[in-house]
Structure formats: C-alpha cells, structure tokens
Image (tube, rainbow, N blue to C red; front, side, top):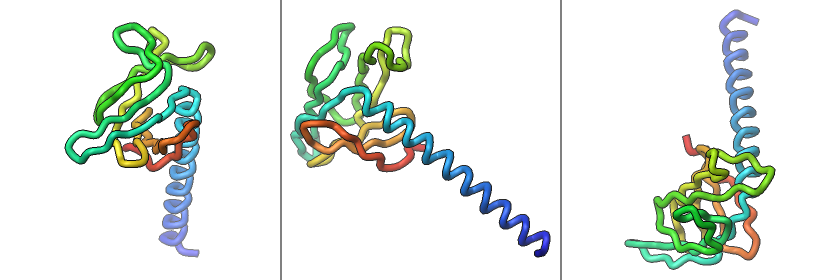
Amino acid sequence: MSLGALLEERDNLLRLKKSAENLTRTAEVVEEFSSLDLALRGVIWRPEMAIAVIEGPIVIEGEVRGTVVARQGQYLDIRAKSGARAKAPSGETRVKLHRINQDDVIFLYNGVKIRVPISKTVKPEETSSGK
C-alpha cells in the first residue's frame, strides 16, 4: 500500500472517530434533556407568530410555574430535579425554544437541536447537531 493510500485511510478513520464522538455526545445531551420533565401540551401555529404551551418546572422571576406559553426564540429556565446536573448555581438550566412547527417544537439544548412532538409524554427525538 502506498503512503498516499495509508494517509487517506488514516484520515477516513479520524473522520469516523470524530463522528462517533459527536453521536455519543448528542445521545448524552438528548438523554439529559429527557430528564428535564418538559411536556409539549400544544401549539397555536400561525406563520407570523406561533406559540407553544409547555408544561414543566419552568422558572419565571424566581418562581416555578407549572405551565407556560412561549414564543419561538424564547429562552426557558428549567429547574433541575434534585440530584440532576444543573447548569447554573441557582439549580436552573437554560433551553431555547428554537422553532415551533404545526405538530412539534425544536428545542436547542447544549448545542443540539431536539425535536419534541405534541404528546402526553415527552420522548424527544434528536434532529441534528446545532453547530
């Protein structure tokens, strides 16, 4: 095998390794997002201004609210469960409501876009890396 072929093979293996690391990280982020106990209860979808009804331990002005109505692009502060890893000293983690569609919402969490369909129980589906 020539040196050029060996170098190309090495580059391919490095790309595969990087892809595997990205998939592992994405799976970890999706699992962590699932532990936030958010539920998408509904969407009022209009092209000019869609809103989503989200249930969970969402903090507004220092107080935990059970259900909120949020707009696309809005950041939500989520109160972490006891024992869960919090992103801020206050015990809260930040999630962005990236996009609202007619039948689902895309959240941006730790650089990963996570699709959450309207349902009784939220089991998000990873869509793609947000980088």
